[in-house]
Amino acid sequence: MPLGELPDYPWDQMAPFAVRARAHPGGIVDLSIGSPVDPTPGPVREALAEATDAHSYPLTVGTPGLRSAIVAWFARRRGVGGLSEENVLPTIGSKEFVAWLPFMLGLGEGDVVVHPEAAYPTYEMGARIAGADALAADDPASWPDNTRLVWVNSPGNPDGRVLDHVQLRRAVERARELGAVIAGDECYAELGWDGRWASEPVPSILDHRVTGGDLTGVLAAYSLSKQSNLAGYRAAFAAGDPALIARLVTVRKHAGMIVPAPVQAAMVAALGDDEHVAAQKALYAARRAALRPALERAGLRIDRSEAGLYLWATEGRDAWETIAALADRGILAGPGPFYGDHFPQHVRFSLTASDERIDAAVARLDADGLR
Image (tube, rainbow, N blue to C red):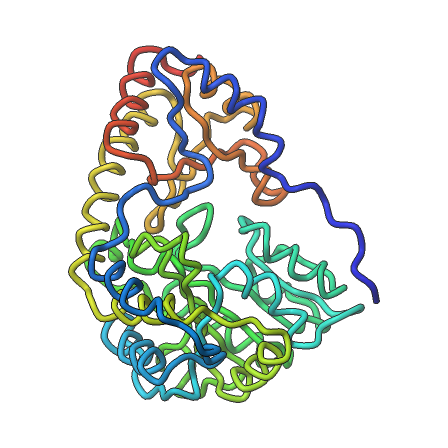
């Protein structure tokens, strides 16, 4: 069926609140979208610069060096061994992969794409682009028989929820009962904070404890935007079932969906350097340690948020009222209704602001509260 009309981009609704926030004498503190503000690591930029003589067409599947780097990264950082170059694929950021995966898998009318109840909006948009139906449902037992793709997101955006091995295994088993592909969006996996995730790696859906060593029907997506401040590079990758990867490669070859060669070189540098990832996590940890108690002192309750790049909070009143109160204090956040119908009273705060801007937000919250 032809592509139907899509809704307006939700963030356009934030324009008047951004105007109010910018009118604050101390300027705006933008904790809304979550775009990185810290510098791209020097070795990554150097690798990009050295690869700018890119006169030949790049490889859709990625250079051998990039594919090897992705395989090695999964083994070293995610505890996923046994992958080969046939299991991985670079993508032009992770959002395009999320948006186009239902279409690339051949889904259409009558098919269901399941996604979390607190969800990144692009899961639903991907279903719409393919002409399929989207369903927000966290309980695998509730997934209908015509489910053909399941998205799980751990750590979650917006809520920072982490699924452990048992929960992921249950999701994979249910997807296989239904004959559905299951894809794990793991873009915030390096950012564990609370409880066991302060010291234990966030599990991957590709972990053998989840899949039983069988990757059939299972994919994972990861982005370097947050861990390496590469949002402007559009640098990400997928991994998993080699048959599914081969199908995606074929579609992408025909469509010209190729990561530029200099970006592929930069990705190799980023994937091979753990030091800058630890340094970036330390920056986010300090910002989180300052912002979270200030939000709580202002009367917000922090829910979930045990990992990831955001604090998921509520005052117990309509989210838009909280957004307005924050804007009057020069602070911009993300309204819960952007992430589904289940959280009309929640707001999302990003940690992607400079130390100075985080300190400004803390000072304003402590001085004025929200009521």
